[in-house]
Length: 107
Image (cartoon, rainbow, N blue to C red; front, top):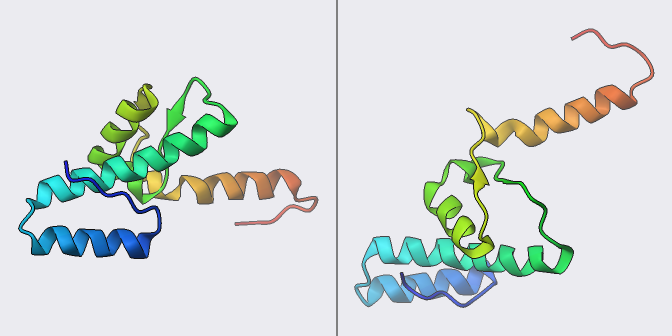
């Protein structure tokens, strides 16, 4: 994989453009992006502590390359969520709102 060192997305984009212009294979660039994102998440997770189970939510949960990079960096298995992982945050927010609501709302 290509090495992408910038944590800032603007600078990382510049690195990607340079790699493309140098003729770096697209698969290597994408793998480098996955590793860069996973590395950043790994450093954040290590600061707060890693729990046993790790799941990806949101649209990135459908990105097998990112899931693999996270598994390698965090040394855990990423739980595969069922269909539509991109709406899990909205479902969770709705459930919390429902718990906190004092009056019944018909949907």
